[in-house]
Length: 201
Image (tube, rainbow, N blue to C red):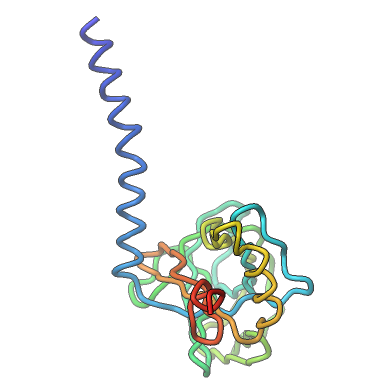
């Protein structure tokens, strides 16, 4: 009987500890992670809100890589910046890079690249970004973690938020904090203002 109580207590402690750890880890990324501005995919129409969140779509999820990957495999994606200061998914690696920010995620698909072996050109919303240092042998389609695709919002503002994101699609970006491969949404910005602040004005 005593052993059962101990096991139950340990199980209960584990149930409490896991969400607490996740909350602390998430807060650490938001407070200590580096800030990045990501453009959002301008679809027409924009994906509709689902209940209490807006669906976020990111452009250019195909990245070059020297490594071959299998579906579902872990991948470390370096983060680059274009001439306007916007971040984009730059290249995929088997191991975490020692320098710079990166996203740890999963591979959706991988195939032989038809890109130039001496130069990789990434199109980021019409902006050409040249990278002569990475001869790409493969192209990898990456998965964006679910917590990066959902912006939770009060139901009273959800429809208005969707309308604003459609109307201001060329003047919005999502602010992401990145630390040790983990990413968290800080906010959506419209004309430089956080979305809720913009909606309330």
